[in-house]
Length: 307
Length: 307
View 1 (tube, rainbow over the protein chains, first blue to last red):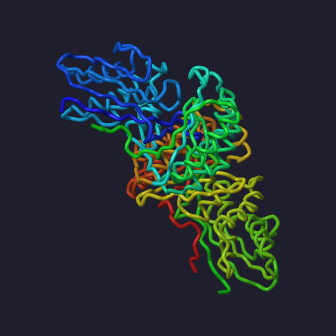
View 2 (view 1 turned 180 degrees about the horizontal axis):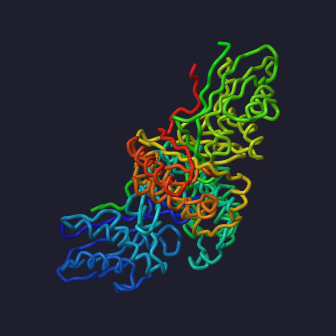
View 3 (view 1 turned 45 degrees about the horizontal axis):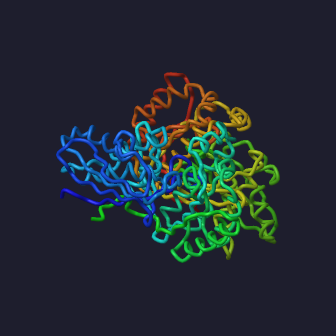
């Protein structure tokens, strides 16, 4: 095996009640990386399709995460990498995480002694830091593990894999507006009421229970966000109208993906997810907001080799 | 069936990361109620053993919860009740909840069409309100459902039953000091940092995942409390020393039961729970704190008919 093609999925972080700790992977949307093992040490980006990015390894998320892994393993060989970006930069569905997770997952395929997903996550976070300024795992982890992942701590990093009910789908809409992650951070309060913190944690616990028991009603009841959404929705025009449309069309839960501007709707079954997509596209047209939309099963596998 | 004896277990609310939303039932400690169906409508308390309480129905938790149920069902008969309190009042392991849950559970046994645990919880909460001033379910629910219960909302009341790993035990110590629930409430901050709220909710989600997957390491990692404990432990002398002793002796997690003064240690297996009990009793003696101690499996059933 000298050359492989890797699929690296888009991911939804936060998921309303799981701010900074929860995320899930999609199936139908993702980047692709082609890795060729070469004698020359280092990460050599030879092609970038779909985005305007630096091909210098030190200035590219793929490069930074890849170099971190080569360094960690003290490998004396390197990789030529072709990057096919299908996830738009800044869309809020883990574009940089897909790059970071994709390269470490890809390199791992060439190793005789494979690293664990936990180790890969730590290395992927190095690439994530280049894009966002800090090492966080809420997109990298679901990208690598697949399904829903819960981060229960960073020191040490601890990731819990949660089960995915079979019929759980997500509808994603990506309005063509820009939200800076920094701004989305700064808009948040430093302090919250104890009461709302408790209510939010009860909801997150309910969502986790709903995932374990495939209880769609519980998932619906619990996937709410009284803590973050009231602030961040101000950055997304027509958020309330879109939310109403998605829930009226049968969506279980609607919210901001990561720091936006993409929004997700969790749905039971593909038909429901498509009905929600139709309704949302109609509403987007009415309010005059240009957007892409996708329907995807919540992925159980995350990254995979496709060639 | 004209007369039954009901066991109503002690319960531990909050469980560190689940402030106001989580609770579990014990097996080895609880009150007993004897109910006799009589023609005369109302709740007639004919005997109270183990505590100094009013025998007037309107002034007694058993009476208030029982009357709420008779009223709700518009029953034209009543009950004579004997109350055997084994759970000390104000101990922090759900003494009033055991009374409230015990009577509604008991009355339910006499009905042809049984009420659900959810309905019983709502009625039990009426009794709880007499004791604590507000209707809350975090002790009443685990008492009735058994195991761990999660309250994901009050409007409407929604209770999620969580699974209990087979080897999960609790060691309870009840130091003979008094903590007023009101004071334990007032000592809490109205606002908390967003960061600590997120960390706490990640831990609660981790504990829920740990219960579903019988992952004792995860239960150990997650059952922490950075939000409430720093405040409330000030009301319990030697809290830190006791916590250290419990964890050093092999306890998975240690914390304040409800608003205290009782403290719980979660343990894997009975032997570990007994070792923790021995260590805690030794430490209690060293610091000169008088206390009772109990070891109990975490109950899977809650209330039960024993005669």
